[in-house]
Length: 94
Picture 1 (cartoon, rainbow, N blue to C red):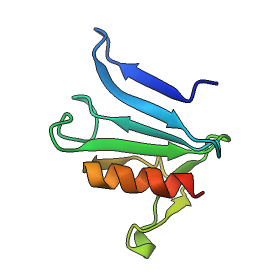
Picture 2: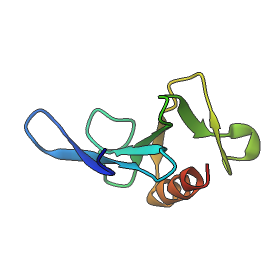
Picture 3: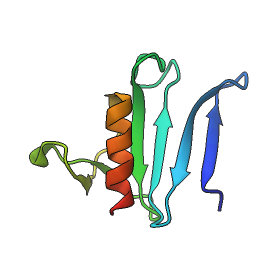
């Protein structure tokens, strides 16, 4: 399985990427015009899932300082670069 993957729109423009960590957690960072973001100017959309396909999101009850499994779709929109780095660090620790 590839650890890095780019995602392209219909005309081949890269609009994001996925990283699968050694713990089999995948983090997707998307910044296309149809994502929940400003098109990559300052924010991106992030989604996290495990190898079973279970979605993982920031825990609102823990002031967004941890990740938890969710029954929701799990999209985290309008993430700043600092938030993306924080989510990657949290995902690495799962």
